[in-house]
Image 1 (cartoon, helix red, strand yellow):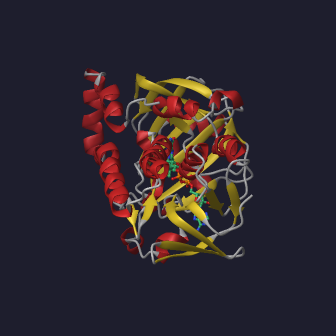
Image 2 (cartoon, helix red, strand yellow):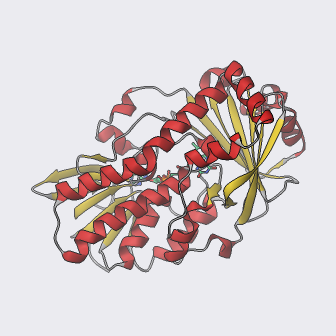
Image 3 (tube, protein in one colour):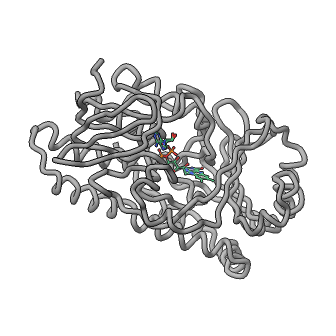
Length: 375
Ligand SMILES: Cc1cc2nc3c(=O)[nH]c(=O)nc-3n(C[C@H](O)[C@H](O)[C@H](O)COP(=O)(O)OP(=O)(O)OC[C@H]3O[C@@H](n4cnc5c(N)ncnc54)[C@H](O)[C@@H]3O)c2cc1C
């Protein structure tokens, strides 16, 4: 394996976006180093429902989520805060897989092709058309190009002084796995005052429950168990779930300061992929597909120059920004709109009433937040 000097591309962050970009680039003989702060496998706060829009692309990279038992999901059920349900068939469908298994599957696929370093990146400097990436323990890495795949919130965002880090976010999220009788072909989204909770099955037959809520709503109760029992359980579906489901984690995972603010797809010459470029509201259920798709977009653009050995940084950056915006800008906008409608009790009531009368609205909205399947 190569030493730390010097790489065509250093990828910072080995979640879905970073792992996919690493695999795609390495398949075309690019010298790639991926730096990830945590060892695999590990659990992440995530709804764990992946849209099928990225399945053909994953398969083209030699990654098959069903080889580790992912569940096929074709139905969607949404309830309002008093538990009135609407069901729909998902236009593209998707699959249920834990991040524990999905990230590990990708890591196993790349580990003999890509130089993976387990360490935390602290600084990235760009000078004389060259990057120097400083890590906590393993020194400095040099690269021609850097991909930022460090997720929704990282120390690197502070280092780069990114705008969204200067504003507090009201959102927090909680996730845990449970033993519970639940249809494996369904992803459910249950509203409650101040948030919504997704339920779906993963490869190992457990139910993942992941919810997003405002700090304001949560702080009335202060404790997760109290919040689930007293606030969330006003929705009868969640009441049934939390009273019968057997928790499989010692305690749920939590994250806070989740920002849905706009971000730039390129900053300080770093190509941002996945949540580093922008996070869609989780109720749209396709942040992971967007992370994978943005890795594909970057890789395809970069490889055109790599294969000709002719790099014009400004042109590559401009092409990536344009393609990223074309693919994601309107989805993010629709996601923000749906979030606003669902989180406001009166607009949410109207929305649910409309969807009851015209059920085709639901798949139509889902389509607007998702892309097409591309190989
Ligand atoms: C509550 C909630 C529910 C969601 N539910 C769904 C869902 O059901 N379906 C869906 O498709 N999407 C969902 N999403 C969105 C989805 O989780 C993200 O879009 C997806 O994880 C993005 O992948 P990523 O690779 O960009 O980031 P991540 O998976 O977060 O990976 C970033 C990686 O960077 C590493 N890192 C960070 N800083 C450094 C550093 N300085 N040095 C080294 N490594 C670093 C981290 O350790 C991490 O492994 C949800 C999001 C939330 C908040």
